[in-house]
Length: 267
Image (cartoon, rainbow, N blue to C red; front, side, top):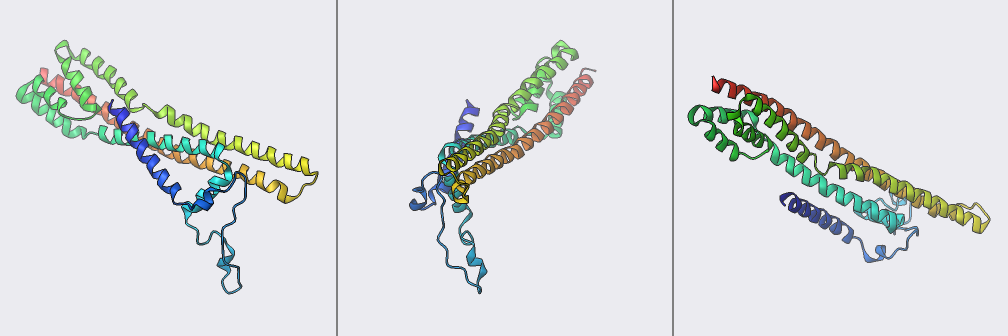
């Protein structure tokens, strides 16, 4: 339930941010039909000021992105944008979850060892119960089986560690799916744009640049946006994997240290 609420919250925040960016475009820009070439108003170029020859020189970045999005067409560009929004929502939810799951294992081990010395197993379990994170949960499961012997503790730690790893990796399959789908839809838009360009050539019976420019432009825009979305999600995906590997490494080291502490305590 907590994971669902966190995901819904992050999705709401990402959608709200995207809506704010899209809403900053004037209404005249939103009325451009699909496939049409948008020409931005610019002052005539002069020899004294060559920068005026660039129509996008003074246009904000979000306005340029909005213009290219409209030129690419709502069908494939909308799907790619949806993949980006859903992917970022899962990414934010996973990053928040993993940051909350990070525990200072050295400090926790000192508390557990002190509790074992002063109050026994129940005091150590109480310390783990009050500590947040997968490491504390694994410690609790191991301490709960301590009366059955060290072998039972090891099996419990390994089994529950696998469960915690699965929880940390939850949602990563969706991110990898979005990484694969984004360039696919971009390339599909590329193919359809090229088809429309060749259809225009067939109808006109002539290979004029003005006939094929629109279709080729749509093809290139959809490809670029699909690759940008895939690259963005891939960076976050690798960061999350590195974060999980770091937590798992600390989890394994802490579990070995816990078993050593239990062995010393029984002696």
